[in-house]
Image 1 (tube, rainbow, N blue to C red):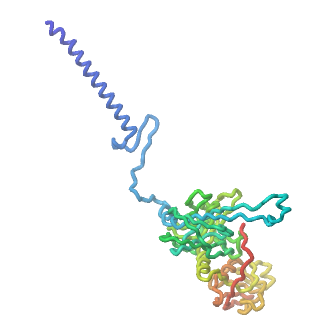
Image 2 (image 1 turned 180 degrees about the vertical axis):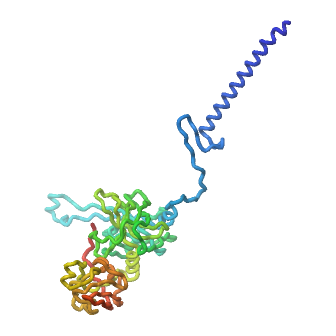
Image 3 (image 1 turned 30 degrees about the vertical axis):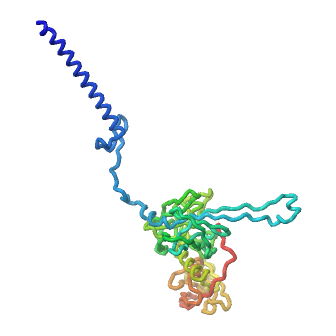
Length: 395
């Protein structure tokens, strides 16, 4: 009887111990679960964490090397290695009166300060030729080129062309990455492009945009030039860098921006690669750019000029003056003639005429389509060499 009386108490004590052990085990397991779920959710086969107030979901893992749809990564990867940074330095120049003792007495020893410059460039040849802007290297005493792979070397100027604000540098390194030249003649407004350069010296940067306009020529930089306009961000330091298409091919050399603040406002300009190619070939082959010239005074065709010269057409460029014994005069061009096409290319304004004539090879005859009152003529004009300008102007 005594043993039977103690059994309920013994049973209850045992159950309490089991329950305490069970609750402690469950507590430890739950605590471990929450710790693992928070810090190492992948151990539980989960991709996210769900809390009481937020839900975060991770994207599925992407295999290495996979390119997202619409990404410009392949173009940037192909083009970026051939875009270089350019550092220039100019030694301090003494004051012109520094040798005058009275000047030194009143003003002390005064001289100019050394200047440093920054820009970009594009390697366009395995031989080490680099395209950049003339204003990037103009007057520089030392030019240092820094490749995307961190190699550094000094460059020498092979030649410059102020009329297009282009310069050709030469570097001596092996295994150089080379930019593939694209076709700027096939560009259309709205095409996607990338601008690659070294803005503000922060390091190589890629920006994207579209072609905003073509044939921009009212920039006061050169009467021969027609620029590509883009809204891809171009800032100081981008000068001489690359404007490329979505395949990574070179379309132009970034040259100037329109800005009231000094930074990008979405209006940038690039020299077309077709022009850059002519400058490159001319400087490397001949040491200078030889442009065609025919000796005429052209004007955009206005209703007043058309009435004055009795012209019936409304398209083309009217010639108001012809240099005596010049190439055009020898070919039969007269004042009042309207040039409608050069070598089959239609002419709509003075800039188009100047750039088309400049692209002609001196000494080789080319066909000019000329309208003389109501008569249409085809004249063979042999251009001469265009005289060098005093200095090209930049805005």
